[in-house]
Amino acid sequence: MAPECCLRNIGFLGVQRGIAERMIPIKIRATARGAADAGKVFWLRLRRSGWVSARAYAHYVLINAWLRVRNRLARRPRVECPCCGWRGYEFRTIDCGTFTVPSAECPHCRAHERHRMLHIYLLRACPTFMRLSGAALHFAPEQQVGVLIARNPGLKCLHTDYALDMIRSHRGTAFQCDMQHLALADNAVHAIFCLHVLEHVPDDRRGIAELRRVLHPDGAAYIMVPFMMGWAKTVEFGRPDPEIYDHYRGYSPLDFEERLTPFSYERIDPKDFLDPEEIRRYRVPPSQVIFRCVK
Image (spheres, rainbow, N blue to C red):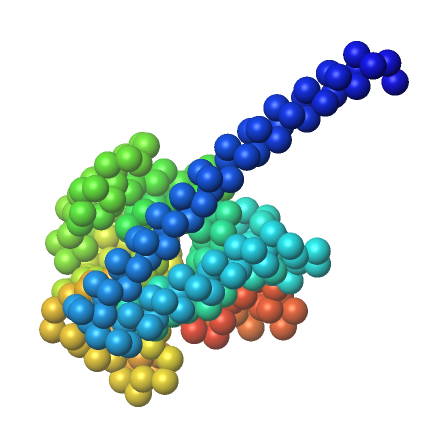
């Protein structure tokens, strides 16, 4: 190699080294800020909610820090997100106030277990979904569900939430509304997507009655709620619990279906359309249940 080429390469490497050396302090400062912020949240949770909440937050921070590294180093992916195609060692843990949920959130698209299950079910095991046409009512709109609704060109999606900030950024038709008093005519919509919303409604029975009222006789409502596995019965908190995302109640899997009696419904469990290897790969636990409700 000519001397001048060597000098150019040495110069280029020197520039790269200089950039890397300048980036290292930036990364260190960012890591230090993140650690400081986590420390503040830990002590805040300890003072306001006690040791159980603070310990859950510490576990959430530490396990996800370890997973970030482990996912980068994974040579043989163990899990896969059907919503975006990401593959890696493990999904992220989520923080639920006094406890954590492992293997829950995709690091790429942030899909949770409910999104992964609904995605596979609608596209593989629910042929009636693609035959629906008309208006689709999507509560507390999530991007992962919105993408699914868009797969059916016959559906026009209406986004709604009681909090204006939750729908302000959504394109298309969006309106602020209380599920207990829906500003829609009877039989107005052909599809309803209500995922992890009923636990935020003060009177969920009233909300379910409203869902049935606005659903078209030829339509279907897809309802999911977070279950407190091991609870013998549903517990009403009496007010929103800030430790659990302002839930009004914790649903037991043993008595929730009583609330769906206004509908005729079908219960869909993961094992109904996923084999054991898929349940493991997509990390869809038994706590995830889809209720397909019709009039």
